Image (cartoon, rainbow, N blue to C red; front, side, top):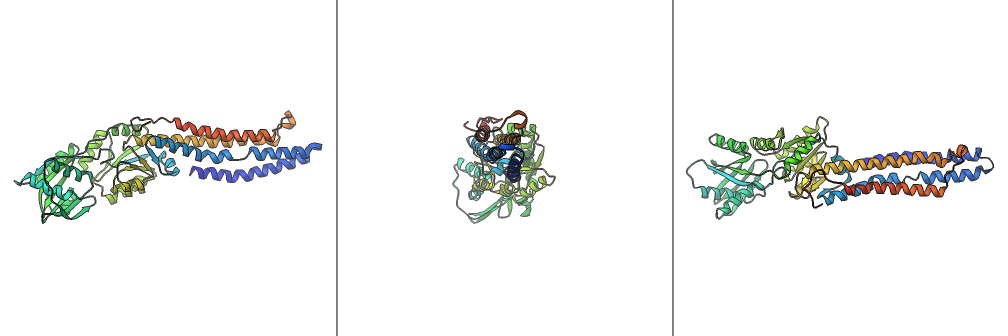
Length: 415
C-alpha cells in the first residue's frame, strides 16, 4: 500500500514537472534577452534532469528488500511487502495456545479410571484410537502407552472430530476420546469426574475424557509446558501498547491457568476451529487491526481472517501457507521482533520518500533559474545529473541501514 502512495504522488509529480519545464522554457525565452534561447534550453534541461523521480521509485522497494532480507537472517519470513507493512499496524495480538504459547509436546500426566478396570488395558484402547491423530495431545497419549511397553492394536474407522476429539474402532469396540463437549454430545454425564478434571485444569493441564461402547471409562490429563520466551514476548507486547488475547479450543480452566502464568487477562477458550475466525472478526469489529499467531490446521481460518497471520514455522504446512509471516524458530519472541522490524522498515520508507520529494522541491526552483537574476547562480545540467544520481545513492544507503537492525528480544535467531 505504501508503494501505491508513492505511485500516486509520482503520477501527479511527473506532469507537474513537465508543466514547470515548459514554463521555464517560455519564461527564459521571453525574458532572457539576447541569451534567452540558450538560457531557456539549459534551464529546462536542468529541470527535467534534477526532477527525474528515480529516488521516489526506489524508496519503497529497496527498503522492503533489505528489510525482508534482514528478517530472514533473524528467522522471520515475510511472504509479501504487504504483510511487512500490515504487521506494524496490529494493535491486537491474538495467540493460539498449544504449540504457540506452549511447546506443543504435551505429556500424559494423569489417567483416572471410573471403575475397577485394568489401567494398562484402558490406556491401550485409548492410545490405539489416538494413534491415527496428528494432534500433539494424541501423540502424548501414544508416547505414554509406548513408554509403558504396551502393544497397540490397529484401529479402524478412525475419524477426527474438529474441536472435540476423535473416535475409532479398536478390537471391535468403539472408542471415543475428547473434550467434555464431545461427551455431552454423546449423552454421557461427566459429573463423577468433574472435580478431578477441574482441579487438573487449574494446574494448567488439559483434561480429556474417554468412552468405550457408549460408557464413560476414564479421564485423562496432559501437561504442555510454556515455551521459553513466551512470558518475555507477552510482557514486551503489552508494554508496547498491544492487547494480547488467547484464542484456543482448550478447556477454559486450562487456558485461564496458562493466561495467569503469562499475565494475559483476555481469554477466549473452548473455541471450535470454525469459530476462531469469528473470534478474530469480533476483535476486528471495533476497528482494531488484529494479528493472529497460530501453528495448527485448525488455526488456518483465523490466520486468513486476521489483518496479518503469523505462523509458527514448527507447526503445520497448512498454517504456514495461510499466513503472511512465518517464524522459523517457533519462538514467540519472534513476534515482537517482527513487529519492530516492520516499524523500522516503514519508518525507513517514509524517510526515503520524504527526502526524495524534499530534494526535488528544493532543487527544481534552482534548476529553473530563480537564483540567476539576483545571484548569478545557474545549475549546470551536468551538476543536475550528478545531484539526481546522488539522491538515488542516498535512498539506497538509507535502506541499507536496515541491515544493522537489532531485534529488541534476543534468543530467536542465529544472528
